Length: 227
Image (cartoon, rainbow, N blue to C red):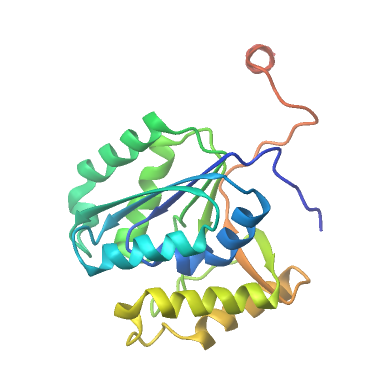
């Protein structure tokens, strides 16, 4: 199994439909990446929960999951469960974010996610970020929509434990949910770890990846188009 390391990681973008989605789907990866790249820029956009306790939870949680990062968080107040009916506002928010940032890596919901809010956001991401590496995170839930991922980020056991502890510390509003517990988070991480020969891992979906032996310039792209 081949491992590819990013050429650089100056800026990450985190996209979520709900407060807690990003941390549940990619919290361990954020801890690892932010510590490996001190001072990395992180822009987060969450579509629902603005002006409520959920926003307070999200801001505190993302600060904890992005240690040492230059973090900016925006939480909109779109209605939970009705994001598809607010398509225009969600699209404008993504386009506004795109105009101020050039991310090296994006974490977003997976396109096959069965939750209507997650799926609506996933469908919008390529319209604003057409040439960016986007990893679709997975969230285990009742719908049973998990499919086989193609990208893995191994997690050391202490990092997984830290992720679970931070989720329970910062998302008090979710503690009574049937799926929000250590067994859920640890069980999925163990399965993904087995699939990449690690103890634990987070896994992601990717739609398109371009490989090159050297960085491509604008002229090389033009030559390739004309060939």
